[in-house]
Image 1 (tube, rainbow, N blue to C red):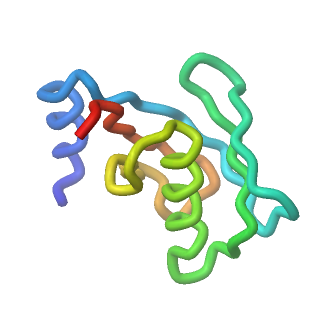
Image 2 (image 1 turned 45 degrees about the vertical axis):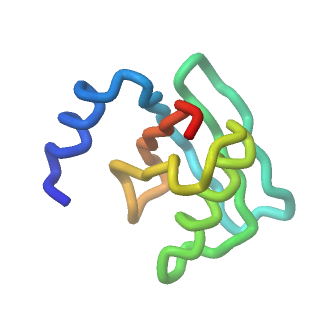
Length: 92
């Protein structure tokens, strides 16, 4: 996927919601805490090895927002603790 393609998709599909994440890995509990209107703090049990934490983040956010897991996409920050995710909350 091209770097600018997520921006294009965001403009073409206004039902996508964009969130800034601050991620804590190796946590005891998996939680989602809202810090602001578009900012979340996510704690996951998974370690940040081989994308395990990213998969866990997508799964946890899908459960939190009550959408399918395929509706959650990390668009920036795959290798860092600060991430940007897009969530398609339109009902399938």
